[in-house]
Length: 362
Ligand code: 13P
Ligand code: SF4
Image (cartoon, rainbow, N blue to C red; front, side, top):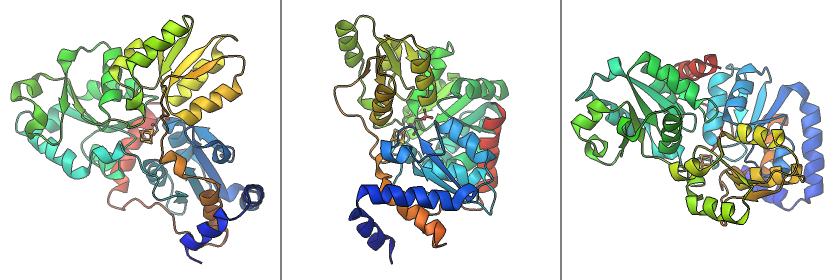
């Protein structure tokens, strides 16, 4: 049966039967299987995750597991990251191959290599620039960083990684998320004067040679289509309506939103912040809807609002549903896997090097 036909059949199966089958298949596969789930996954899928976490925690778990089969309930770059960090005999499966990340698509190998060459006409790139890629990027870019003494970061360790990067060389080229790079650098005490933005569609990224020579941080002009929907006006309205509210924001949000927030952190840090708060503390949270809804249910004693009046949901994270999870599990059981993620062999060692540099920083 084709994957298409199997999915059609599974969409006609009652949800209770799907849940029963997934539970049974998980039990049958035992320690041959590890299901990793990102916090943005829909609830019914999230419940089947053996380990739930942000990108950093999931990278650490992927690097440590012995399971022969890893189902990654997340998006494509996360499954690539797990394939890079696991051994050759381990298989990483992405339940829906169309679960991508629009931010990761905003920088490709060709554009970044062109940027590096253009920068080299003005500065000695290999001597003075550390490339830092957000984990939300292709394996090809992680490989680029490995080759050029660079490193990967997540929203959970960006400060630590950028500190290290500046200890190696005087400048950082940060891609693909402008906001994570900018918000982190501002929190570290850098000023606007230290940063430039690189637009890959303009010569020299839209900068003068003098500005490039002067900059400490070169920020790729990329963004998250979900987090860009939060606006500082939303924060002001919340504060007016709820004077005691605390605003929590993910660093993929714009600078304006992060500057109005009481706390900025990765999904894992946001969760910890809510857990540690006193009962009665209210929050408005600027990150993906599925996570905020889960926090609201888990903490009925802490009123939790979604910062935006609009629905900010990651549609690609949402693609993984019970049907795709069930199909992935059946394919492992029958040894007919079609959704395995395999990073090209020539990229793997370099990409692993840049990821390992990050993991070594803690
Ligand atoms: P973290 O879970 O690492 O905070 O990242 C959020 C995100 O956008 C994942 O794609
Ligand atoms: Fe990509 Fe944004 Fe979705 Fe995260 S939330 S996977 S950065 S599109």
